[in-house]
Length: 78
Image (cartoon, rainbow, N blue to C red):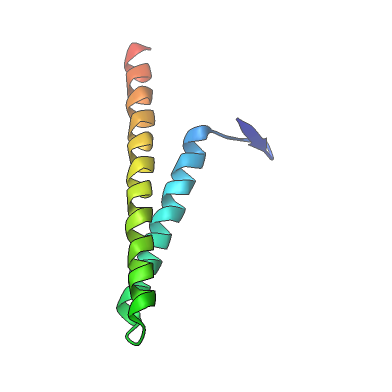
């Protein structure tokens, strides 16, 4: 874990940030697909990027959910 200015940054925090950033890129690339009308090759490229990143975002979300389940389990045990 890292500390920055006395604030502890956990692995979960890093995963959350990665998930948020990935989802933002998915939205951006899908928007580009809708906006580009004159270049099918670019549209296909951005669509492929959006799909790949959406899969990665899904994996990150699964990790976040596992972190949250573990946290709930710890709280119930205490």
